[in-house]
Length: 144
Image 1: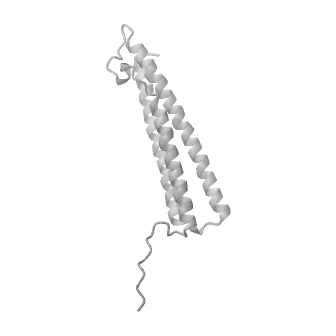
Image 2: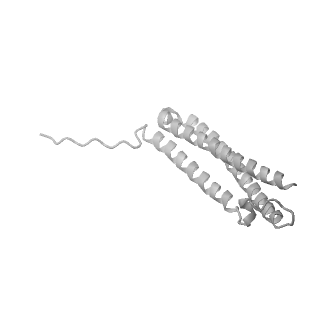
Image 3: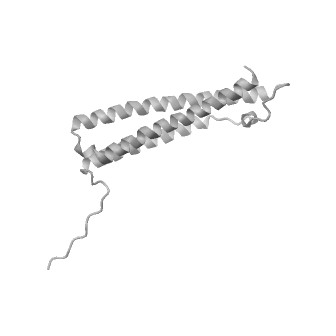
């Protein structure tokens, strides 16, 4: 693979990771909106169906981010190894320093898991409280 193709492919993987995160956040905010607006109106079967569909979506997005993080780590390693070769034009690239990007997939995994748990908690909290999950109780008026 040429130097240009490696740098271009890494840029494509980074852009795909950003697109994947945007898609995941869209799904998470849709679940938050569903929890706030309709969770307390759903019966048990419908709430289970919504949560199963959302879980399948999140699992797919999780593995997509994991795969993109793996590709990013492999590509940065390849760029770092080729940057040291004579005649390489990759010395300018930040990945040429040899720093591992292995942490990207672990960070994405933790963030996706936290968002998943938070949105599921919110959905079922709103369902259990009848849509009044975070409203303060009105102060009691003293009896006269």
